[in-house]
Image (cartoon, rainbow, N blue to C red; front, side):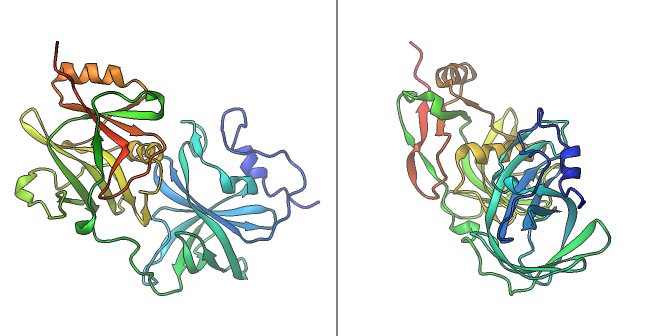
Length: 334
């Protein structure tokens, strides 16, 4: 009798405690051996999971830095247990304390062609919306592999940060009539700024794309501990908090090799929350779904100028003003 390829997967998961697919033991489905998925996994440490359909399962590797884009750089790929084919469409929150606990989002999925598949080398051509090109995986030992891009580096996927213009909220006088469709944030005032984080350092850009001199944001050059060592682009406000300057972050637009602007606000905020900014002068703006009137009342008590209302299913439109993002000024006291 052949070994159950999903036995390890099932032993690590309790179907009553995880939203992940846990199929019953039995014959494996047959497919075309041509589906891949890459999932962004906010577990104990952020990483990306590459899964390739092979003989009824998804053969899987955890890649801490995502796919390499330059053939001069190889990335670590940790071989993990085979996953069921149903996992190719899985997104969700795995409960804390469970195996792999954390947020799981699909970063890309598509088809691939196999050029070679042996115990010593897996060579494939991926055809996705983000992941394209020829890659080879090869083992260092039984668990640790490396992944190498065989094609030349792809062209830049997005303009430089200096050419990105923040999305602007539309002004409204009242909370939307369907508040359950929105997430609400405080407008802390201050100066709007994009922050590009690379190699543990931050560069800030004004709304017109000009770089903000370091002297105008003292103490904010380092976002502090906790962020992964990956390029990230944030959107937020440079705001005075007491006697100090803080960067209040309310959105994440790019993460590693991924442009997140096409994701919904709810997914971007979940990603931002899981990044757990911990710098002494960097803070993630709190957000609350549904109860905009209560937010306005708290904003008035705290002397804040306004509340933002952002549609949970709205995307980020650089440089545009959209009714998916509203700014509601705090009304004057009666």
